Figure: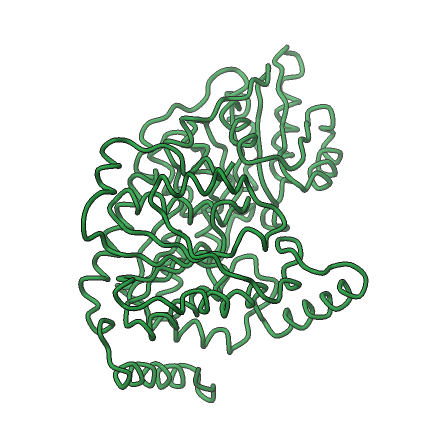
Length: 473
């Protein structure tokens, strides 16, 4: 459970929390622990480890009452309090734009109205969480400059970036943008973004003090498109050693190959791996080796269909969607975890930058990984030093089958070095970035209204020059 991310604290860390004059971080995170969503994992780790590194962390996030599904709110609150993390809880308007995550009127007429609103929002490229931005600003209206040293916003939703700039203008404090995924160059976006959305991203990037993004290729793409240069820093996802150590392995009783999560077809599909499993099944026909592929997630139909295509129905176990703790237990007990960034051998830069967060969890749990990724992918390069990850293109079913046979026969890859991708290490990099912004971005501190207007005018002129004919923001 996500609440478990925030548990435990050493004596040394407690002493750190008692330091006087701690720098004050205002953290805008729509998805944050108590919400059982992958977006809450990264933000929870950030808040926890920054607090341990001496930051006074205040998180601006929606009240639990707006979400359809939440973890144990009482437990989460106690864990946050133990870590010294404060929250400013907000409302959320226009919940009908995100009806699967947010409570809203979705019966009868409400369902029809909500559907119409969602259709219009998609056509106009309006974020489903647009109703959070004004509520977040309102909740922060009582803050003054002495309450904040740096503003950090995590997206998506990228409306958090808009709120960060607004608060930065009002408080005269620098803001930092954290991209969990690309915004207008997203690898799973169904269509290109509207020019107005691109202009807004340009403006927000020009005004920020720093940018963090989850892979080297995405950082390169951002710099190519917008010239962010030294502002951009690679801050991948990672694993939490405390959380991983607390996971109990599930005893499958046989050689288990596990995949947890979602597929994004056609580039993230199970088909090529099923072809490798078919080769494995044929090569082990005369042996007594017992193995099964276990799927944990909501897309059972996709897995079932592909298994039938390759004659693997007798080798597949479907578990459906389960709590995070159960999924981690399965990965820890598995002999091999499957991770897919893309089944395509060649792909654009933005696809090479896909590093699924689940790969960090498998490494933190000490489980070998079969990674399906394009040639030259960031995931392949980054994970090579761990010793646990073996990478293949989607077309290399023979190579995959060879590794699978080794694993079934008890010859799995062995771990080497994984500490570099833990949040213990990653948080130190984030800490340095934020402190540098606080120390060097003096133009954001104690700015007069006239100076703020001048900054906004320069940003507007830059946007117009980059996108001739576009309106200023």
